[in-house]
Amino acid sequence: MATQKRILVTGGSGLVGQGIKAASEADKRSDEEFIYLCSKDADLTDREATKAVFKKHQPTHVIHLAAKVGGLYGNMRANLQFFRINSAINDNILSVAQEMGVKKVVSCLSTCIFPNETTYPIDETMIHNGPPHDSNYGYSYAKRMIDVMNKGFNQQYDTEFTAVVPTNVFGPFDNFNLEEGHVMPGLIHKVYKCKENNTPLTVWGTGRARRQFIYSKDLGRLFLWVLREYKETEPIILSVGEEDEISIKEAAEFVAKGFDFKGDFVYDTTRSDGQYKKTASNAKLRKYLPDFKFTPMDQAIRETCEWFTANYSTARI
Ligand code: NDP
Image 1: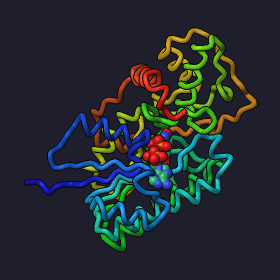
Image 2: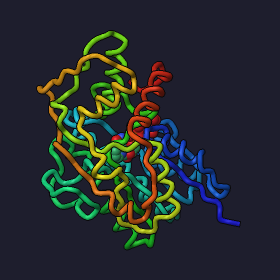
Image 3: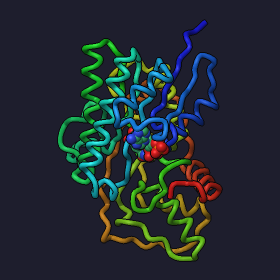
Image 4: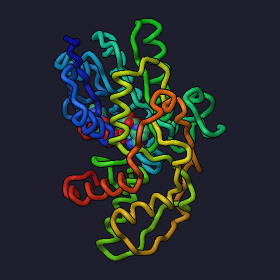
């Protein structure tokens, strides 16, 4: 009989955690038990609370998602807090996991932590090649240190600590707050309101910035593959292809379609666009999984719009 795996998912109540939950329920294995944590189970900035939750659940594997996460505008206001909170959480999770004998931890980086000045497409080898964009340096440096710690733990303790690098994630359970959320949930919330009030849609920025978006349920399926099959400790980018990068204007059009919104679009160019583009290569992923099928963008956005409408009263807005 296969050894029973107890997989502790930190940040399990969030956008990515719930994507993993959906994927694991669609692809159940008898030797796997998932435990999804939220901040009420333990404040992971607190080392003793982190130890206690590991003692309680005795995980054999960890998927580490818990983080202070925010969009461009939230980050710009609080770089110091993003750095300190995320550094504390990451240090606690990785060191307690090692102390408790957890062999494999899959942590989560992001393509927005890559150098601001770089060549495109970015790939897994470029994470530390220069300073990140100034708007989110706190979050970025804290995330980059996960890669540094993984290397150290693997060298000194023979662990298999690795990390994945998703592009912009969207889907059910996202943070749809207009000031602090990411661009896609922000657009979804705004279009929902515009349709309700019969007003034009105001898109922040010029609409020209370009991004690769991944549906949380697709990311969930890829996380499970990394947990089960990926043997490298070097990070791997989890993204749609370079050809699937779209402008913010196109993203807004997809959302309008998702809600059947026919009103006008206005671009508020007093708002920053952030980095113009961050095109990431998914060549490494494609080398392993040449046949993986991403959900078509219009379907994924429509499903998310439907989820938001059905869950408006309880969603994070
Ligand atoms: P969410 O904001 O949706 O979820 C964050 C999760 O972390 C929640 O479960 C939250 O718990 C938990 N959490 C936050 N602070 C603490 C704390 N102090 N102690 C314990 N738990 C805490 O984020 P996402 O799902 O979007 O992000 C998950 C991971 O994916 C993060 O590491 C993020 O950096 C990464 N990522 C996200 C991208 C995106 O586009 N969203 C892109 C690339 C990477 P609670 O629900 O109780 O608050």
